[in-house]
Amino acid sequence: MEGIVCACIAPHGSEVIPELAAVGAVGGGTPVGGPVRDVGPDRVAEALAGYGRLTAAMEEVARRVRLADPETIVVATPHSLRLDGGHTAIVTAESVAGSLTAETPRAAGGSDARAAGERATVEAVWQVDRDLAGDILRRARARNLPVVGANYGAASGGSSRLPLDWGALIPLYFLGRTPEARPEGSRRPEVVLIGPSRDGRRESLVELGEAVAESAAASGKRVVFVASADHGHTHLPNGPFGFDPAAVAYDRLVCDIVRQDRLDDLLGIAPDLLEAAKPDSLWPMLILAGVKRRRAMTAEFLAYERPTYYGMLVAFYQPVGCRQSPPAE
Image (cartoon, rainbow, N blue to C red; front, side, top):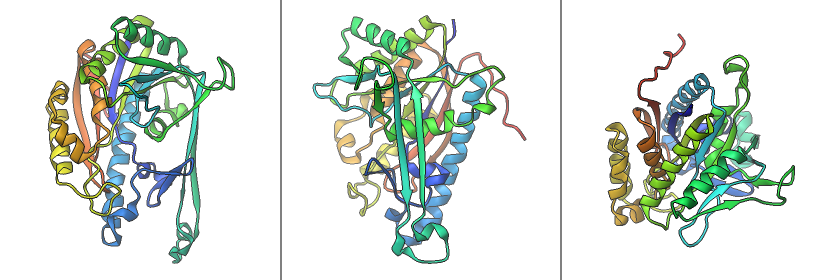
């Protein structure tokens, strides 16, 4: 019985991907991520340094995940399907695909080629582990949880493909882009995507996490769980949500919760704080809290940065009793 072999909390700011750093990223024509320009010209270098530290932390997570050699990566992303009525979406399509494109403004001028309108695109196609997704769905329904299976286009085959949102694409960029670094004989993992509801009972998402861990164990597969999570979104007055000091309070609270390995404390965060801070991190992390109830893991806090209008952190969760190799010199 394998089951959950490790887990992480991962950011999904587009500039964490080096190819997209220092420019605004768009996916399908919709602005996403945290454009460095939002911080103002006097803080660009500082912001890029913060993104660099997050990138380094995600590279370390990716190294550890490769050592775990997962067969499936389950990603809880706050930017997948958003369903009414407190329902959580579990993707059951054959595959998912998406892209992010960054382009510098042509009016920027200067000698840097990126300032002359250079484009950078990151694309990804992942096969879905339909067996695991279906089993998670069945176990969640057996608990009377409000979950919906989500397919698109066709029942199966190449037309059964859902869009891959940036909340999943960015963590998967790190966890899946270097198959040559995996143990010999391993293959690229499949994925399961979960779009948690922000409207239902928080405890329902924790219970869903328990179902994820139980399903992973029953499958016999090596499974990694990823909580894709960005935190307070009201750190800057010129950001899209304006400024509210609640963002600092929320981020400090979440950092303390992760550092002290107390994810169940997420259940008690005040609704007023959520409304003012506008995070997207609570709901994926609640699922992770449930995973940890069924698979004992210890937390390692790797990084926190606030290079733009929202905060981001990276943390790694190692099963109790397992050891990872130290980083290569």
